[in-house]
Structure formats: C-alpha cells, structure tokens
Picture 1 (cartoon, helix red, strand yellow):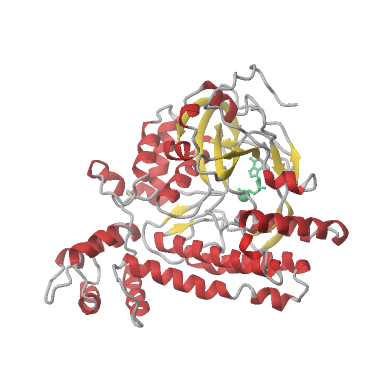
Picture 2 (tube, rainbow, N blue to C red):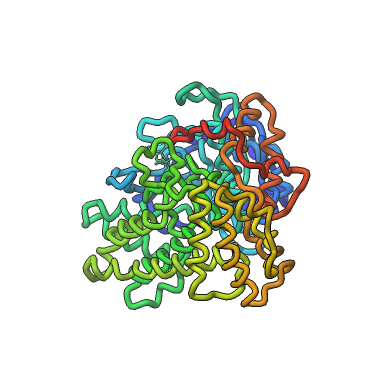
Length: 503
Ligand code: AMP
Ligand code: MG
C-alpha cells in the first residue's frame, strides 16, 4: 500500500482533480503495474515552473504543503493511481529486451483549464518491477539538468516533455560518488515510446499481438485520430510518427541540441524530446560532436541524430508489422516521408535563421557553405547565429565586426558577398530581418557549464543560480542585458566537463 504519513487535505478549489491515466485504464494490466511511490524523505522545494503551473491551473496549489507532499511521493492524492509501465528497446543499436519505467511513476492525469489532458510522472520516486536492480532514484545533478532543459526546450518552441517541479532531499544516493536525491515532476500528453510497441512485438504472438492492437487503437484514438480512417491505420500511424520525428530532428539540428542517448526507449511516439540525460547544446560547432561520454563510438553524435531517428523508426516499423497485413517493405515505405519532411523542415529553419524570407534553389548551398566555415574554425554555434542579425546587406558594406570574428576573413567575405546579393534580390530590410532573426536564433541556451554552475551551487545549498537560469531560459530570444554573462562563450574549464549516462 501507499505510504501516507499525513491525513489527506480537505479538498479545496485549487486541489487538482486527479484521474487514473486513460492510457493504462484502457490498456489493462499487461501494460503497467501499480506501484506506490517511495517517499522522498525531508522534501524541499527547489524550483517549479510558474508557466507550466499556470497552464495547468495549479499556480495556487503549487504554493501549498499538499503539493510538496504529493509531488515528493509523501502523500497519495485521491484519484491518483501510481503506475509504472513496461517497455523494451534497442540501446546503442542492440536489442536490450525488457526495460520500463524503472524510476518514473505515472501518478495519473490532470485536465488543464483549456481542456487538455496531461499525464503527470514523478521521476526518482523509488523502485518499480522494471528497475533492474537499480535504486529507482535520481540524483540532484541530473534532476536539475532535466528540469532546466525541459523548460528551456519548451521556451525555444521545441516539442518536449515538461517539468513542473523539482524537489530535493538529503537522502544519499550512490553513483560514482555519494550524491543526494531529487524528484522531477514531469508532464506530457503521453509518455509512450517506440519501445512500448517493441515490447509487445517481441512477446509470443498469442499474447503480444492482441496487446499491440490495443496499444495501436489507444495511440490513434488519443493522439493520432486522423489515422483512424486510413485503410491500414498502423501504416498511417507510422507515417505520422515519422513526420513528427523528422520535424523534431530539424528542431534539434537547428538549435544545436544533442540528445546523447537516442535509444528507441527514449523516442517519444508523440515526437517530443524526452529523457534528458547526457544531452548538450553545441558550444563550438562540430557536426560530429559527441555529448555523451559513454557513447565511445559516437553513434549519437550531433550530425548523426536524423539518421539515428530514421533507424529507430525502422525498429518501430518492425514492431508494427503484425498490424499492417503487409511485408516489411510496405511498412518501410510508410517511413519514406521522413526524408523529405526532415529536409524541408531543416532547410526552412535554417533559412529563417539566416533571415531569408523566400526559398531559392541556391539557399541550401549558401547555408552549407556558412556552416562549413563555422565548422572549420569551430565557431561557437549559438553566438555565431545570433551575431548574424547585425549583417548589413548594403552594397559595399564591410560587415567588419562579423568578418573579424572569422578565422578565415577572406572566406567569410566571399560568402557574405553572396549572402548580401541574395538578401538584396528579395528586397530584405535589415531592420526587419534583424528582428526576425533574433526571434529564431536564441541568445541563451542551456550550455553544459551553465547547468554545471547551477548544480555545484545547489549541491552547496544555494539555489539562486538554478532559479536565475530557469528565468533567463524562459525568454531565450530576449536580449536580457543584465544576464549577458550567460550568453558568453564557455570558459576553458567547460572543455573538461564530461556528462555520461550516470544519473
Ligand atoms: P535511460 O537510458 O536513462 O533512459 O534509462 C534506461 C532504463 O534504465 C530505463 O528503463 C530507466 O527507467 C532505467 N533506469 C535508469 N536509472 C535508473 C535508476 N536509478 N533506477 C531504476 N531504473 C533506472
Ligand atoms: Mg529512458
């Protein structure tokens, strides 16, 4: 039974109306196991997301003792039915068998004032049947990273799971050293992954195929209703997931986000960024940058993310095969649109980053050549894009400040003559273009060293930097001159930072 060391609060207007998660009500016991949270001892509020709390209509509740106790697993709210779901997956390209929510518990779902149903998970609230010998906890370090990155990605306009709250505790947790525990409250319309389908596809067909069918019906009914009327709904779903995943990859590439562990169990069926572990935003631009210290082969290097996503979609296609009445080639054909969707989306985002209002045949080469200049000199990815809004397109303009930032000034000059001609050809206004570019080229991203500074301070009991970062990253496109230092190139010590799967 659930650990409840305090009586439930009298219901008030602001107490959330928890309901069991519809997904697992419909799907039944083969999909998830009821598990009581292991309370986080001596919970302490570290931060919460005011914007998400407000979207969920929970602003008042978030200030209450009930919220602290509920979101630390100390108190089980009426209507909530904590569950851990089972899934499987391919990790680093190899079938890993059964995985599952090893430390995330789905408390239930809440409806926002706007009528959206959102699932709420506690990450780090103890062991589940899928913990595979691990402790079911998450350390403060990785919880700060997940909390900040979820909210930063949302502010960048990139689909992501959200983070409502971050709660800390003195509970010791052993990793490479002894750290302390924390719990992140994660929120999403659904936490279903490619690996959920893969799990049932790998079971004995007598059991698994019925489950696969139920999962397909649920995903389509709740998240892809437009696929229901297709001749083969499973193929329509594959195509729809491919398109969303392609757009997500374009978002990641455009902003310089490297996920680090793109295993199929970390791929959202809704095309959300999910499971923030050893991620990183590019500092120096290197297409083959590897952000995860554990990824020795560079399988998940920055520039490989789109092709890895496509590989992962093949694993999903394989899993859905029994529902397609066809062969693997037919299922693979449903993934085909990924390529054009990704290429169109990434080109559109990069054109916008360059302030190009129309699409012209030579744009891809123009963009490519700029990226080559930057990759050769390992230019800072975020700062280089941001600086481009100061470009003067007038004939004969020297753009000296921009040119001087390049190790190959002649190379930049030759490129900028093409760019200026291209801008003049479409009648671009420098002032209007600068504003448009600043609204898509962020000034502030969650660089590793920024997260690290906030983590070190938090580990010493000071949460000021954590809260400042949360606030600054909520408006990543704004100048915020008082926080200029957070937009600087990384200090030397940042080059020696290593992030791994340990969390
Ligand atoms: P990840 O690659 O971080 O997404 O994790 C892979 C699998 O390991 C997932 O099924 C997680 O739930 C599980 N896992 C990771 N860390 C822990 C932990 N400390 N306790 C229990 N399960 C964990
Ligand atoms: Mg995971």
